[in-house]
Length: 370
Ligand SMILES: C[S@@+](CC[C@H](N)C(=O)[O-])C[C@H]1O[C@@H](n2cnc3c(N)ncnc32)[C@H](O)[C@@H]1O
Image (spheres, rainbow, N blue to C red):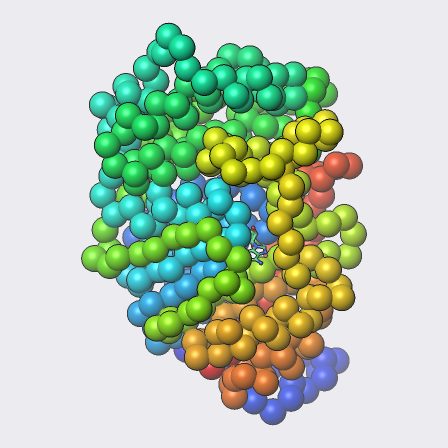
């Protein structure tokens, strides 16, 4: 366990049972494999915080870990790389698909025959993506490629290979889309700063991403699960440790994942069962409700979340620009846990919004309840 460090005198003394630490764990190497996980340009991704997270997690006693807000999957993958059994979920489909392809999948890569099958030309194939998104996102050639490759997924013999191919496609689209968000559309030449990612075709991206995602496949000797589920629909059993990284209510703008990533959500299931809002410029999908998005419901949602996982060690990621604040969250956690340790470090998030690419420096917290 990390040594705890006192905060400067200007800070109030922590309440009894609460410990603060600014340990950086800079010298602790990441486990083999963990560093290979591709970074997704995803709002709130903890990819760059993985060494710090690993430093905290490695001191805790657990074999089975849940990540019910899996997002880009990098933390769930770190847990797999640490040798744990992983239960990953998210209320959006595409994070569940990424986790199925990279974490549940212990063996299946995109080998030569798989890639030939995926790239095969079709005489007559579906053209839903081209029809729906022509003039909105990507070039016609790119949209046709997405129609073709997703139709060819059924030619792959194993569902995990299909999930891995979808993960590679999702990252390709994120790299090629200016700012990595699907809120901007039409003539995007104003964002063209000559970057290679904007110049490659989606097919070229996909070939590169297939090679990158092949590197992440390994077997840690355990069976993992990934599914699409709202956290409050889960009935956790036998989870030694839960990593909680819900969205926080931001001071400005919003935290809607569907608004930014609806195209990836649709792509992950070829828009089957999704309701497109036809009157929107970018053909958005209706957003699912989450209580973590609103001030009036967030505090209750955290209380409910901690109660749901009261039998597990709770590791909560949080940041200083969120609501409720850290003290309130610690108070809620202490309803269910006798010992609470708060780790803190500065962090810079980069993410695109309508207005500009925001660069926010915040304090990132890991609050561990046992
Ligand atoms: C901050 S992100 C997680 C980032 C992730 N840890 C990573 O490093 O990429 C929060 C995630 O919570 C998901 N989410 C929001 N509300 C949810 C709910 N009620 N149940 C399950 N997932 C939810 C979002 O889809 C999003 O992927």
